[in-house]
Length: 368
Image (cartoon, rainbow, N blue to C red; front, side):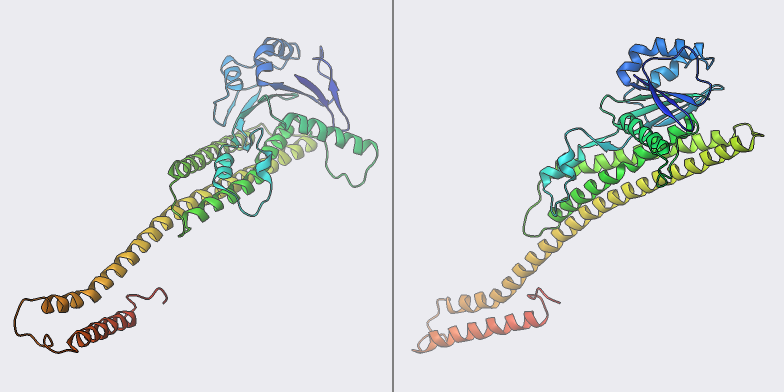
């Protein structure tokens, strides 16, 4: 567990939970999932001591559930958001190398490199509790980022235009936005590997037999689409709940509330872009399969057409040889010393004529 105190002009990490809430700013309690499960009693006691109210049992079970989809819920004293991240699984960093061509093995690894573990947020008025997977880097990333913002302000760095989050909801939206934007690297990875799969599917010089990989890729894209739809639904419910918050007479608070709405809509737009890209990849994979079967059917038709033309050419030749193979005493060219060569010449002229006729009609041509 890591505890941080965030104000408008300072950011500090606390060694333990304080007895009372600070006079300014808010507290951020970042837990690992197992840490929260073990230390849930201490966290509940601290929330009661600070006058925030406890997290209900059903929401505690949601926060420690590793299989829960993205969703939003609320009470009169806090809001809860569970958001499934889209990130690369541990040990898959070598897949992000921008090589020109991938392989089927790397495509299979890429599809398995998608980690959709949930991150839970309990948003109080002055306390934010986050529950992360064990290997989640979001907590460390924001701890370092907020620390750099504080150092930049202390040094009066004019280039630092960012500011510290003004409320727990603001920090929560920044984390969610970071998790959505982290899909950009994963998007590049999936696009490259699916392009490799499509290239192998449409290669006419090789026979594609790795159908389990193709089915696995389609299932992975279906899971991604379901995850993105759950993300969008959860954020839309959060925006609807934000609109129902009581109006504030303080202009500063009203301005911060409006900034929350703007940031929430921006995060929702990013999720919509991710969902659009996932659906585009899914449609591209489906199109590649259809094109593969179309190309396979076209190649089969070409083979059958060639065999049919060859059969049509040799059919009259077989007729001629069959006629001269009859056991009759009197037949044309049989007693003629040059009859064999005349028959061969007739066969060649007939075969060449039929070949030219079929080529003229483009039955044997591979070009337009």
